[in-house]
Image (tube, rainbow, N blue to C red; front, side, top):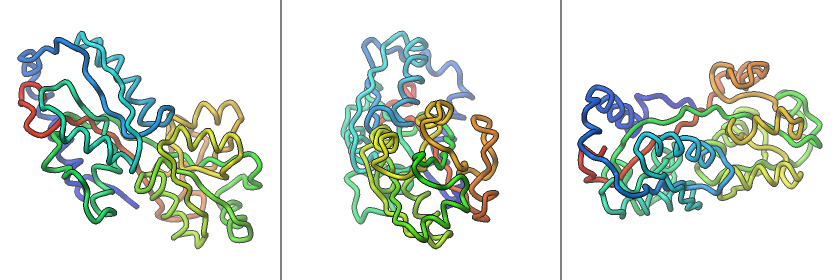
Length: 269
């Protein structure tokens, strides 16, 4: 699952919107919010999207002079939040921390979506490129990707994700495809609830965001085996990539972008 700009039209739009804003620094002065701004998040609290949104919301609020209120609307891998945004008043007071799931993956997985990411949503800026980490509960007798593959071929294992169609889900399915394993997918309404169940031992593993997993890794509560990106991550440089660890060519990236409803005025964007 190698994901590049040329294969994702919505990501091209996000980057283009960001470059347009950078190229015209005076444009933001045309609009100044006078009340709090709602940022929709399509996943439950505690996961990577939620954690990122709250951190960015603080800084964004400082810049705009208004509070950014995080509104978690979990379900359908971000589709519910994206639909709410598509129907919101295009005045700058409702925005979305969108993810690769709702914006780029789900249009291919769902026969019909209640919104069109290209027609109903207006990109503001690309926000984050997120590293995912393959983490397992300490009870899982595997200290490497190769050991996990061997174990999964002899024992039933399951893996959680933030929802059907999310980056973690597709990373798991890509792993199964390349490794010849049958790890059972267990979807949640966000990476936060999935991590809670991993920590308690209710599930065996997650392809988790770095935001939701690194703290637990460093505390020794879960074991990290590899990162899903093509190159090693500076957050956990000691970890090999999944490709280095045995599955040649494996790559599963994740990204977030900030969006507004379509027809939001250009000076507001």
